[in-house]
Each structure stands twice: as C-alpha cells, then as structure tokens.
Length: 52
Length: 250
Image (tube, rainbow over the protein chains, first blue to last red):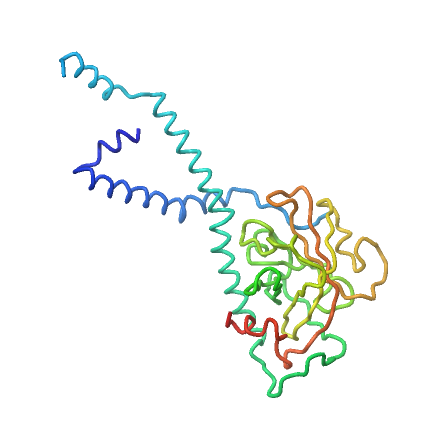
C-alpha cells in the first residue's frame, strides 16, 4: 500500500521525500485538530465524583 | 534481465498483495491508536490545561486580585472569622484554587456543581450539597486526574502541610493539606461536614478534593482533605506566595 503510494508520487527521490513528509504532516494535523477531538467526544469521561 | 524475470516483476506489481496491505493497515491502526492516546493523555491536557489556567487568571482579576493595600499587611495578621460568599448559580465560576505543590503557575477555576460535561471540563466543580469556602463544615470539590486538562493530576503528591489557597470575591482562604483517603465511587461519606460521620455537628472548616483513582481508572476515588488555616479579605491582597500568579504575572 505504502509502496504503491510512494510509486504514485511524481518526480525524483528528493521531491518524493518532501511530498511524503508534507502528506504525513497534513494527515497528522487533520488527526490532531479534527479526528482526535471528534473521537474524544465518544470516549466516556472517567468519573471523579462520589455519588450515591 | 531475461524476459522471464521481467514478467515476474510485472506480476508482483500488478497483483495487489492482500496480506501486505492488511498488515500495513493494521500497523497504521496501531500507530493511530498510540497517537490518539498521546494526544488525549498528554498533548491535549497541556493545551486544555493552559486554556483553563488562562480562564482562571481572568476570573482572578474579576474577583478582585488586583486589590493591593497601600501599606502591606503584616504577616500573621488575624482578620477574624472568614466572610462566606453566597452560593453561586449552577455552573457559574465563583472561585479559584491555587496549589503550589501542583506547580508554581497552578491555578484553576471552581464552578458550582459537578456536571461531567458542563463543569468538570472547565476546571474543578463544587459539590452543591457541601459548604462554601471558609464555612464551618466541608467545602468539597471534584476535578479530573487525567484528561480534560487534568486539574488534579498530582493530587497523590500532596504532602502534609501543603498550602491550598481558595480565592472568592470575598477574599482568600488558606487550607493546609492533611491526609489522603481512598474510597469506592459510592463513598459519599467524604462529603459530610465531618467526613465519614453522618449527622455529626462540625466545628472545623475543611476542604475536600475528590478525583479518580487509580490513574486512568475510575474504580476508586482518591480524596484529599485539608484543614482551614487562615483567611484574608480581598482588600488585604493575595497571600504572598501566590500574589504574582493571582495577578497573572507568572
């Protein structure tokens, strides 16, 4: 899968490395700002109160 | 390269390697889960904690932390019995808590109520059935130990005599940490005016902090008790140890 993605990138190796890094950064940013907060809204909150 | 070799290479490229793709997807999923945990338990706590701190410093100014007496109050001045602020509206921010043991820059808001989604995401929350800061009885608050800024992350590191400062619009209440206790989630006895003793008239002014225990679990509750030490009105200015922090200078 990743090998296929690598082959799909255009240009010489140095350009592919830069493009790959850009894609990884974009995916990480999307996770941090959108995906993780969205998942977190489904994760149950640990209770910290005492209740009857 | 022979013709035979070349066709072998072409076959390897054109036929998708199902197992290989599944393997890569699983590895990706594993990395994703670890990234999420790192975000939830560390990075996001730093971000949310910073936001909660900013909120608390803004509230500190609102509550009047900038009131500094022209002549400094002599250490050990007795201001008599503490003035008790009126009970705040549900979910309203009405106080700040400062715990130097949790960090020199540690301050969090205290809101009325302990709703998981409306209060405990902002800092600490005050159990409505318990007393107010400085009042005879038990001022009990709850906050997260992990996630949502983790205001009480270091609750287990408190040491006897550690200062716990509470700020309201009336002034500054100083409590000294006394002991930890571990109870089941149903251990509401810790909220009694005299903890664990139902219907006993109190003569002490206590603060009670509750959070989850062990770390990352909700199997038990960790309880920190503090005993009232002193109080100073707003006009006397913040206690020296947290004065700079209360004015947003730390």
